[in-house]
Image 1: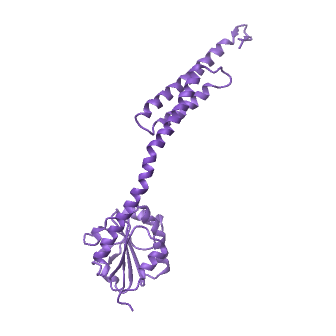
Image 2: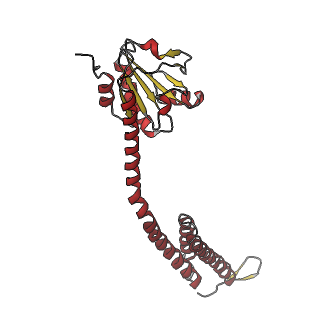
Image 3: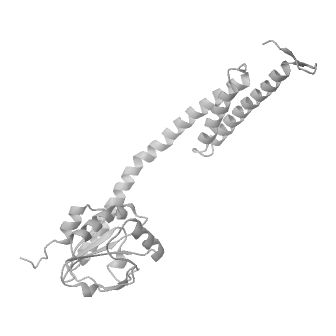
Length: 266
C-alpha cells in the first residue's frame, strides 16, 4: 500500500505512513493477545478441564479482530487463530473422553439410589404398616397447634419433605389438588420439614400451599428413622399407618393410597 501525502490548511505536510504504522501496531497487539490467550488456554487445559474454554474463545475472537480486511494478515495473527482453534478441538476431545465414563456411571448411581430409597421404604413399611402412628404435636406456620391423635376420624397424610428436594417440590401440586378436592374433615394433609420457619413460609407462599406446613424435628420412631425424602405416611381414620411412600408419586397414586380401605374394612 502506498503512503499518501496530505497538506493541511496551515501548510504542514503529513505522511499517511504514520497512520499505517499505528494501525499495524494495534493489529500486532490483537495478534499477540490472541496468541497469549491461546497459550494460556493450552496450559490451563492440563490443569482444569473446564477453564480453557474461557480463554480459547477470546483467543479466536481477538485473532479475527487482528485479521480485519484493512490490514494484512500477519504470522502472529495466523498463529493465534491456529492455536485457538486447535485448543478448542482438543478441549472438546478431552471433555468427551472424561465425560463419557461419568455419563455411563450416572444412570447406575441414580438407579442404586432409587433402590436404596425403596429398601428404606420397605423397611419402614415392614416395621410400621398396620400399627398406630406415634402421637406428636407440631405448630404450623400459621401458629396453629396440631396433635396427631386429635385427627382420628379422618384420613391423614403426613408428608416429610424439604424445599431443596426436587421430588418433594414436584409432589406439592398434587397435595394442593387433594386439599382442594377433599374437605379437611375427610382428608387432612400436613407437610413437615426440619427447615426454618422463614424459609418454609416464603416457599409456601410461592407455591400456594393450601394445607398446613410445620417446621419440626420429630425424635420418635418411625419419623426419626426416615432416610430419604419425600417420605409420606398414609393413616386411616383410626390413626393406623396404611402405607408409607418414599420418593415421588403422581396424583392418582397419592389419592389411591390416601383412601385405601383398612384391612378391617369389608
